[in-house]
Image (cartoon, rainbow, N blue to C red; front, top):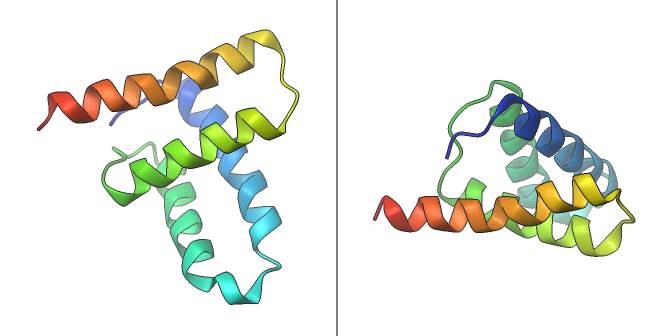
Length: 92
């Protein structure tokens, strides 16, 4: 899945915050590696697919539910999982 530059920037912020929270957990090495790889892919604006897309979708949903966001940001983030789902189903 390819995103717009604004979406990539917003997603990088979310994943950076999640990484910050998870990096202290030593029992979560595989999760930290996955999130680090995902962040690098977002940084390079690469196409996100497979397990990375699934993880991104989960992190977006958790971030929206756990944080107070402006209506604009919240709306953008709530629309991304639906966009990802439509895109992933259309490629099957």
